[in-house]
Amino acid sequence: MSRNVPGTARPPRGIADFQEVLGEPTVALTKLRELCFSGIPFDGGLRCLCWKILLNYLPLEKALWSSLLKKQRDLYSQFLKEMIIQPGIAKANLGVSREDVTLEDHPLNPNPDSRWNTYFKDNEVLLQIDKDVRRLYPDMAFFQRPTDYPCLLILDPQNEFETLRRRVEQTTLKSQTVARNRSGVTNVSSPLKSTPSSLSEYEVLPNGCEAHWEVVERILFIYAKLNPGIAYVQGMNEIVGPLYYTFATDPNSEWKEHAEADTFFCFTNLMSEIRDNFIKSLDDSQCGITYKMEKVYSTLKEKDVELYLKLQEQNIKPQFFAFRWLTLLLSQEFLLPDVIRIWDSLFADDKRFDFLLLVCCAMLTLIRDQLLEGDFTLNMRLLQDYPISDVHLILKKAKELQDSK
Image (cartoon, rainbow, N blue to C red; front, top):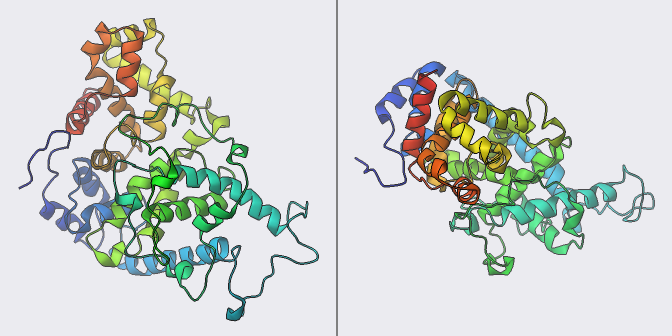
């Protein structure tokens, strides 16, 4: 029986309950959602499996799982070949000739369709991704450690393909050209996230190895290439991080081996639901982030008018704190195990992230006494460095708010 450690949520529903629902030929989604909402056990890879179903990666019919997984993982290998390997440099003795420099196409070719032009543009995005993924969860060693399953397609010593890390090291483009930062995402970073003062502090892994952050970098780079309309926006690294960590620590080694491909597709599905938060031109539309931030305040007004008026009186706008809470699904406000527990409930929410608004509201009402007494400066500090670490308490309060509707 696991103990309740301060700062962590209570043990979830029994493993047997999950096994019963997942043991059926067709998974009953409503039952599964209900179980997952209360927290998913890590044991036996249950969380990894449930998240794959909740994020619409795996269908409800179990008979389709193995063929779908094979198809998607093969597709991901194809993406690697087309987007990571081919633009890189391969050994000529493998019969792969250098086609990237010809009379028609060369590094100074101004044609927008030039492969070199694309390569340089990609490097701008890659530099931003690289900067962000290297500092992913710096308080944990996990992302700096080597993966047990390095990408053999890329790291096979016979090939000497250019890895993304080497590509970043070789490029001389200035990362200032990437102007995709969104205010509030990382400009007030959580004190939980201390960033090492320089990248040189990171250990360099020997040839043939790759760190987990490099896998995350590849996932984000391929996502950016396949989704040019949004490409990469700062903060996406904070969304992919907990997904990849969960799949890459799956106790089932058969699934763990494919953590990269599975994370890519689950991340893509999740982004299809929350991508509007990252698109600046949609901020003020009904599907944009401004509307959702205002919804946090209108919900608070309904549940606790005194606290709402106090925040209004002090001119504490929701974008000062709720922008980061909502856009990053609270991934910067809590330690990773607690973020994962919150995401159990968020992914299980059949109204898709309506519950997130209630969690934000619960976070405000749980510190109402301090907020009512505090001045603007003190209250801003409370909201940008949230003081309560017991996520079970927050989720319980959010559920009460939901039930009181």
